[in-house]
Length: 113
Length: 112
Image (cartoon, rainbow over all chains, first blue to last red; front, side, top):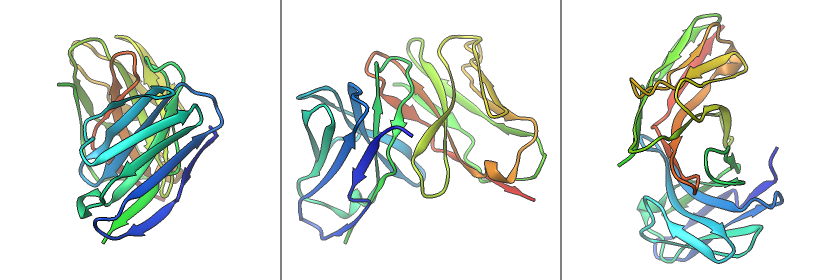
């Protein structure tokens, strides 16, 4: 299995609080991604990174920010959590991006109450 | 914009039945196409892929052929097993960043 660790695996938080999810990889892959999975929507891209300090927005980036200060870590922050951000969040990594396989973490189940 | 449409299911089959999950895509260029599988409580893992027209991806008895003329990438397996019960996602990737666009997923249940 690809060395991807997401933390925490489960979290319940209150509306309006900040939340940070962490993705850690041991594969030294250049590309890292955050997706959210919701019933009826499949997975949708939130943000991605193509190198240290190089990030860009995905399809559903509103309300989220990311940071990548080291190759191995990609953080997803919800500045002020809302109930619409209740979801399962997956981190993924890949080597070269173009046409290559993405390896996924186990996911973080976030509930905003 | 780019998109993926797949049959949503759920699909329930008996063991050893033939499986087809339809997937069609819309893309402006020449995407790579993927099938990912998600077992209960786990992340997604690559099942197979094809990077150009007429390529056939195959793995664990599953097959899919990249059909540019019909913009399709249907997943097939000749004889399903109970252990194939999972959610299957069709996806495409276009451009150099590797961003994936997923279909909504198809839940497959195989009964003994």
